[in-house]
Length: 368
Image (cartoon, rainbow, N blue to C red; front, side):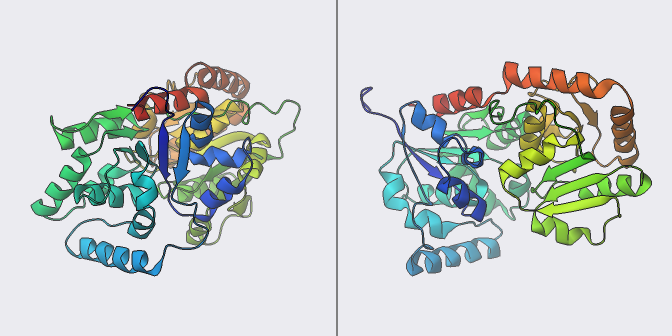
């Protein structure tokens, strides 16, 4: 590729209402933070396309064929995904210099289609919980198929150092580069809201399936004198059942409102079940950028690579330990630590975890 020609990147997104809503917002909107650096790559001179340009659902042939392939893979012991969106976007994807798969739901179909020659463009694969999927593959033939498909990528990016190490071991010496790229936060969009009085003691925000909201409800039931707010997906909220009277619940609100809710809390609580890829990382970094004191589960996903230090810029608690989580919350709420934790949290993300730094690292991986 001649250096004078701009890099063309095809973004492969999970087809969701929140992603489409983000794409519909003007550049600079907080919602576009959900687009994995698309705007920042454009600012660096890249040309971008994506699989959600079509307003309607993929054509019937793509849905029928893709659905059949997914069902066959599940029956044979593998994992499927959104083959329909991948198939419907083949022409555009194959005209790009590189494909950035942003989530396994679309990434798995793309690497399998590349394995069988339908995708020709190099793929950079973002792994978000990939080890948990790979360990569930049934049978050696299916394990070999997915290993060969992943080895056919240009690179694999993980936002957790533990996940990157696991994937390197699983793929072996002939695997592609597996790179740990710390996620980042927009320091202008998420900044301290000076002068705003808190209206709730504890807030917890999140939609990913590893969030441990039942643990937080246990803590809330023990502490009726404290007020709690949970902002979660509708699926999470349905699974909670009845909540204690000191817990308010909101579902699926826009990111700008999530930011307002974070600003209105004294402490941010992020309990997460043990896993390799999720540490409530996005919300954690947003809260830190806003100068908030955060109590978060010490999952493998954030234990290394994010410069987190218990008692210095956050409070880290072992996953699943409700008693320790409650003690850390109380110490943060009742002591003089909250302000200093929040100040050092902001300093940490300014130094090492900005969105600009993330976008620059991503651009380097995507460039030939």
